[in-house]
Amino acid sequence: MAIEEGTFQNLFPSRFLTFSFPNPNPDSDPLRLGDDSLRIAVLDSPRPSDPDPRVAALLVPNGREHDWIFSSSYGQLQLIANSPGISRLILVGNPPRADPGTAMYTRPVRSDESSRARFQKMLLPLLLALCPKSAFRSGIPEIPFLVYEDNVFRSVPVELCNGPVVGEMLVEDVEIETAGDEEEHITCREFRRRLRFKRMPNLIQTQMRIVSADGEFRPDTTVLVQPYLSPMVASLSLIAPHLEECIRSGSRPRALCVGVGGGALLSFLRVQLGFFDIVGVEMDDTVFQVAKQHFGLVEDEFLRVCVGDGVELIQEFALRVIHWNSLCDKLALHPNSSFSYHLVPNGCESNRGVEMGRCVNDGDSLIDVIMVDLDSSDATNPHSAPPLEFVQKKILLAVRSALHERGVFALNVIKSGGDSFYGSLVTALREVFSELYEIDIGNGENYVLVATVLPVGFVDLESKSTILDKLKRIIDVMSTPRSISIPSREAFSNILLQQLPTERKKYSLSFPCWKTCSRKNMRPCETWKQHRKINMRGQVKSSLAKDSSLALLMIQLCAETVNPVI
Image 1 (cartoon, helix red, strand yellow):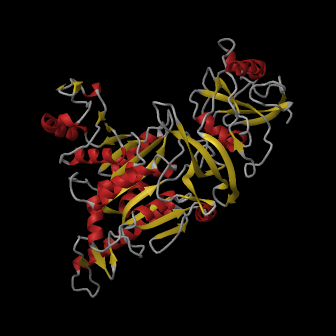
Image 2 (cartoon, rainbow, N blue to C red):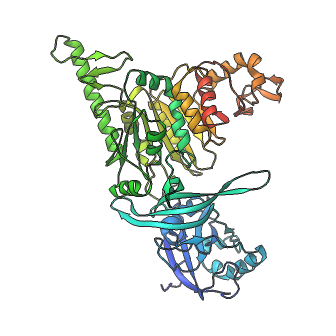
Image 3 (spheres, rainbow, N blue to C red):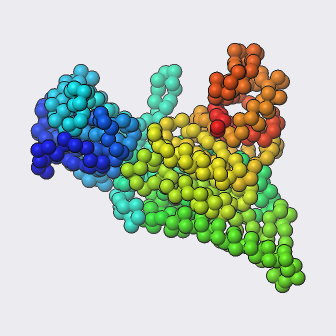
């Protein structure tokens, strides 16, 4: 496209322009951008510009120019969202040669740094010409080159399709590098199948390990590879006694999964925790069909998926519960009515075969666990998940109403620096739920918020619990160090003060109330702010009171670090 003079002198939020420019060194450039012309893409940040705006450039990895991350405005919006303080981002690369649905990729050999630096220097006059006028207020601006790196070694497209709600989506098989032996600097490679949407290409909607069977690859539904999913499953430890009671009564706990994607979470719950009755809700029917065709999602009598708005479904469940409670109140006032109900042994109300608080084949039942894994659907938002509706108190009240009084709510959150949404969400959850836990996944993006309707109460770590044993077995192999925040710093502090004189040799810890000089020499800290983390390793054998026992239990399942929520 033709660029008019003065086009780039000012910043315009979210403006995205592309044009061709002669390659300053087509024969010997280190990035193998061998075309005579380069594709230049310029994006202005959606956020208001700073008085002294910063401009950055990024060289598109050779062979990835077709990827939506670099070829679409959506991908570039996500790139600039992950680069705080950048007002304009300039991408330099080859023109896309193929459609994302047909282009295969293999990571090229990395060029030497000196050649890369020379090529970047050749691009400097162009980059300065693309800077806004205000960037020169303090002299000639410095333009840093950002580096895009991920663990993808090879990718092969499986299917490119279009959904009525999410738009274009890509199923791809990738070979990725995973951490191996850190001491010997060994990396391992693993094959995975991924689902991505064009509207948010940097966000992997679903990722599953694939294994070879009968000459073809099939998804492995027995493990979870996305790092935030296992902590979401670990949240079930908070209601393990409730789930045990449910199973002993002959009922099936009910799980509602809002946001299906490829169905990794649903399939895992069905295969590994087969005692659940699972209901999934997915907005886009094409996504649902992709999950069945490419990710091994299989519906049966205990796993059902409906196509629709997950938030609306939660509200519908809540309205049904309110209607049921109103009916029960009327029955209590008129006990001689011909319509009656009774209590089942585990304390759950039952009427005509419909057990309240259990998951049976009736939509009027309460839900034992609600897990939400939804993106915000808008690349211009500084946060990628969940949708903005979940900061609304009426939505969270609906979640609480739909849950059993001993139920749990787990929510995947992706936050970015300077994003006020996360703080607002935590505040709203605190106002609605009794207890709130935060699990920091440790990747700088994902956090899992876990909320309970009522205080959870005592959990005996040494109790004979089929569910706890199962959770420990299926989650332990997937776990990496994470951070869990617990709801009450005072309660946790008092409990540890009482327990540490006899238990401290089993722990290696630093806690707000203790300054750790050695494992045998601890003394109280003067202020809370001196320490904020607990690090516990090894076998934890204790029967502490509520807050600490829950925290230690979840440490065993998915974490090594605990942070109190203040």
